[in-house]
Image (cartoon, rainbow, N blue to C red; front, side):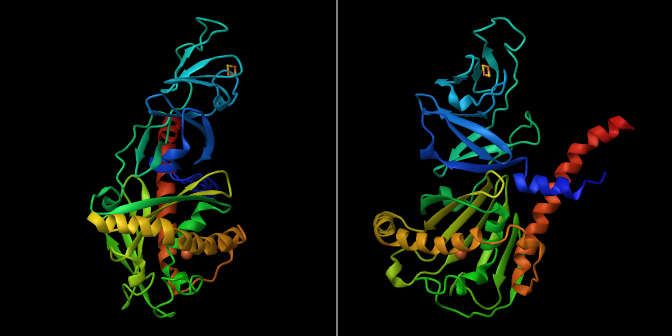
Length: 344
Ligand code: FES
Ligand SMILES: [Fe+2]
């Protein structure tokens, strides 16, 4: 069964399915419904009084009004247009204007499995509405007592795949971020290699480690993420290298939700010292560095990746693009199979 390039591109632009994607920082969602575009869907999220989260497609099963304009009622939401109540599981539990009609009891609305981890809300985007969620794994250090992290969230005007490319490109640290407090050391020429790991691969400089932004690792474990480390000068406080975990989720076309967790391996009073230092000194500098990425990426031609002349330093992003593409293709092929068989 062959799948068209357009279908693969469409799948990639909306994000891989059967995958957990972070959609918002936890603190953004309250008892007041919020509407967002992520991974090809418009989604409404809200919490009940106990703080439990719900996520539904933001589309009323009656005539399609955005449910986010409605009234949250704990574990259900009442559409603001004609009052149809949809449960957190996506069932139209009550149709006040026409009790007993066929819509009542229908599981007509897509609901998304939710996990709230590491200060962020993750949703599972299955191939189909009823595809069961897989287990969500995250980098162990994000949930370890020995590490301390800050989530930093932003939204950028560019395709999320350029953000993955950017972080899978350690060499830009020595140029774009040359003036930064932590990336002014080390060689500006290097040879890279790809090293296979259990759940992905590591793209790393040969012969230079712990000097600058020298490697990026990709992992796919139900969610995908990149991790990297930046060595810190002594003025950067306790905790060894500064670690960053990044996940980038598609929003509407041309927009990306950018999640970076910034971590250091610190416990006891070192943890307090690092958290204080981060909030008072480092955070501002990090945003400044991230701004350099944002300004450049937002101003790239959206079609730039069709006219590239790549060299050795780009092996990592080539590898990552190929991985995403193959996975998208395999998902579409698996999806198309039952129809193909039925047609035979
Ligand atoms: S469109 Fe929602 S109740 Fe009619
Ligand atoms: Fe950067």
